[in-house]
Image (cartoon, rainbow, N blue to C red; front, side, top):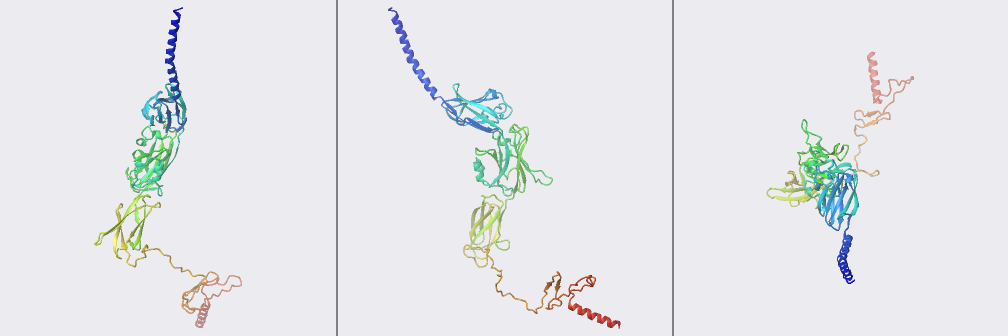
Amino acid sequence: MSARPPQYRVVAVVTLLLAATVAPSIGASSVASAETNASFVESVVYEQRGDVANITVKASQSATVNLGSAEQGFWLQVGVKKGTTKLRLNTFKAGRSATYPVSEMVWAAKGSVRNRALLTQSIDGALDTAEYQMNVTIQGQERALGAFVVEKRATYNISARIAPEALDVSKLNSSADVRNATVPPWRDSVAYGDWFFLRVNATGVRGALEKSLLDGDGESGMRVDFVQTNPPMNGRSNDFTGATVERVITGGDFEGFYLAVDTAEDDVEPGDKYRASFVIPKGSSLAKKKQNVSTKFRVAERRVLVERRGPGKEVVVANETTINGSTTLTPGTKINISARDTGTDPFLYPRTVTVSKNRTFQATFNFSKLRPGRRFEIRLVDQKETVPAMVANDSAPSKGGSPNETTTPPNTTTPPNATTNATTTPPNATTNATTTTPDGLTQRAVNGTGKPLTQRPVEESEDGSGGSGGPVPGFDGIGAIVAVVAATLLAARRR
């Protein structure tokens, strides 16, 4: 018996030691389980085939995001770190390991990724339209479930806008930026050297969009063509593609993309006409049938015309005068205009004005210190043009007026009952008046006589034939007398 108690004491001690060791371990495991969590900010994400999907994950510690599955033929694993990670999944390049690296299939726009791995075989085109499952696992345990849906893409239309030559297109990063900096084309035209913006309104193109591939020769399966529609006689048309334009602009606030085209590049000349087309050819991984949308535009000369004031070719000014003009330049363009003379008493009045929305401009100068008759020039510095001008010789207009101010002519219309001093023709004055009879016959006085004009109708014969055929114009009383005298002379001659 003495030996048994010591054995029980040993067991008791071991039990207490184990309890002391295991209990804290169990408690720590429970705390860790409670703090291990993950979620998708949007449990279901929608995107068109060929576009880039935005998938945002939150995790309490490092985790693995599974996109797709083996059963769906596309399974991509991405390791993310603790916190919020905004993933970008390119549905055009995803799974195409024979063409693109995994880093171009998925990446982090915010946060960072630890690793990436494609667990299925390479596919031939953009991801098929379908609903793909996704989840987040931590230490092999699922912590969040979701899905991303790849929808059908579409091509809608194409449109154009224009902007002044001085615009810095590198600062445009959204549709709002472009629209605030541009205006619609003027009669489908853009001034040579100004910016032409082509907007392609289509979904499912972001994943394949690269400027260098917009010639249709690459993997993008799409192209943008600029074809001259008025080539020179017996000459070649000037054609180019979207691969050579200045910049491609995309943004999160619109579908599709903009192309910024410098109309002074790519051998473009004033007077050229173009058709711009966005084409997805038949057999592309983005569409089964060919898709084509287009628009046209014309490149106009850079013209700035100053309105003449007064007769001749000179602009006539006096005192404070506003010089007006019109132009083909895009609204918002700055025009440098000056009045100057390099004579014995030189002067220079520089101004910078802005082209209005209706393509006009104004510049106001004070010429009150210049003597009447002095000649000088209006210079358009940027256009390298000059217009002759002269200070009016006549009396200067009132302050703020202009020498050729349009005035309303006096009212020359006489009221119906007003008494006028108009000169009237005396009754006996010689006139060349004419009178129209009720039968539509016109009579004129003979030898300037002032007597009333009369007409004697020819009597009808008994058979109603009207005698000699009806009245004779101008055969009045004088004509009858002449006829009687003639008949008397003829009778005397026969005797």
